[in-house]
Length: 210
Image (tube, rainbow, N blue to C red; front, side, top):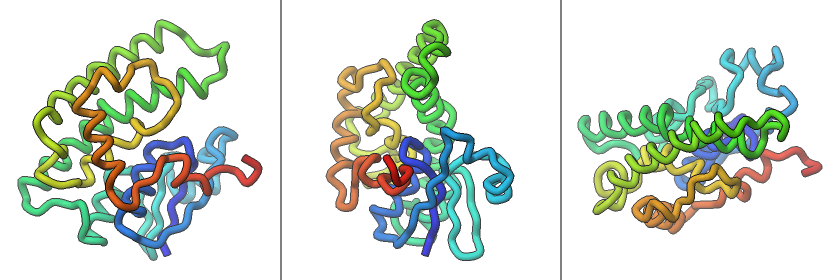
């Protein structure tokens, strides 16, 4: 059975968990206590030298970085991957965009506003990142206007990469109601059999006492 290392608040781990759920792939989640330094221990760095989640262990294959893991699962399951070389390049383009402009900006802003100690939250830094988030969402909203999915005419791992942080309830200061094409797209993904809210799907990624 596949093991996914992660924790509930991680949108990058949620991307992988959602892919596993939508494809009906058996998996278990190994909780990593990120907020108490669990990703920086020597034991965890022996699994991933980068000190990050997600990590996916599939038999004798250990993978890190959500985009690489999504590509592996698409090939493994035959689902949500490319149907041509042109689609492969377009999926890769949007995953790379998301890792740099989408999830990276939203995840950082969400962390600064919700998980950083209040006395360390710097309004000017948060405002800067909120501007970056708004710009990124504007790009995605424009792309989705008049289309159902990011690539081709069906759900792909490009959608699963780009959507994950947008389902979390914590504020990052930019309302999704400003982006109607994105909100409609999120509703379409939500309607796919196997979809679960991050904190439902990842509930086993919380400490037992939570």
